[in-house]
Image 1 (cartoon, rainbow, N blue to C red):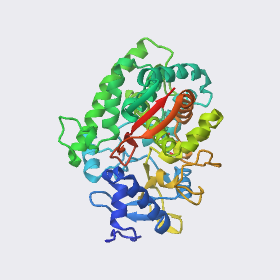
Image 2: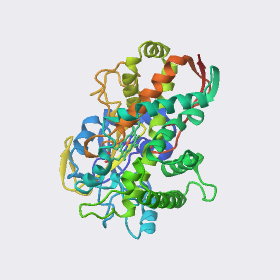
Image 3: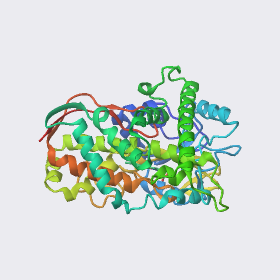
Image 4: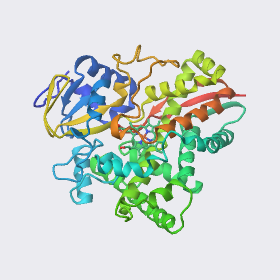
Length: 440
Ligand code: HEM
């Protein structure tokens, strides 16, 4: 086993580092989770330099991620638009170079929350913060109707031999967010395709036919093409809502104004739309599919929750911990700092490994077992600190309603074929989950 060379901490084996850093490493979840475990046990905070990528610190422990995330002034998300800048989403060097080429030198390809620090981050987040607050009760009936529609449309009484991801899970969360957002149902397939390109850049199953697969330049080009499609679409949406306001999230964002009473630059509206259109459904559908898979392998837990629907919120929390569909965000140190006894230097970059933190035995008993009634369950699948997911209450509401509607009808779930996982180190989970679902 060779060892990754870098200026300071050197102990992480190259195969462990590659498994975690490279998108292709994420296709084999068993090896990926072994690699996370190796880090937690042997080098919980270590620097690696994988070929083609800048050196980064891999942050595998729950406590360290929280320590980093609670100090945005020390560990910045921003600066992507400045020289010597930092990308809060890990790309390889060729990808970053290409992004800079596209933007004229900036890595901030979008004016969206993930690229910002307080106070700018706070001002932009506040535009929709109220809308996303926990009192989403008002949407409950509407979302329940959408859940029933989805079950009625894609599933039937008796035997359903389906790919749970491709033939069910992908549609409902997208439909919910697009409905609340104000995008017509006919445009939803376009949103799915674009999201898959946006997040699954390096995933061969998500390649555009008109771009050569898998070279770093092609991957960057594909990403840029997806963004251009989004811009054109949302250009029209902003203009429409400014001209004809409606009672939807699109209107709220399109009509937001700065303190001086001007509309925000269009790029901020696009940033919001893209964040919501992308973050708002793949994450939720991955969690739904990951949870169904665990219920299939734990029929006792399926019976328990089906028999007592008040356990659904616990099921969802464990499903979130287990699936952790957001695999990383990056931070950059703005100053020297000591973390877990290691000397951090200003400019160092950190890959926050949420999936690893959510299997950390310092926080979770028996972390590699799915436990419906895990209490406490302090997972950080939604992150932590000022960047913590704004959509968390909506995601939990959607999942709760879906499971409340679906579980009473499930007689059994059987896994019937090979699962497939999206090839990405950023946002993703199951791409395919063949199941036999017996419904009443
Ligand atoms: C199971 C579902 C979801 C998971 C696991 C998830 C996870 C995450 C995570 C880990 C972050 C980064 C937090 C951090 O940096 O500390 C995040 C940020 C974000 N999420 Fe979610 N998310 C989910 C659903 C949603 C939904 C439904 C929406 C919107 C409709 C949404 C919108 C956002 C936005 C806009 C951000 C950026 C927040 C910021 O940087 O301040 N997410 N999410």
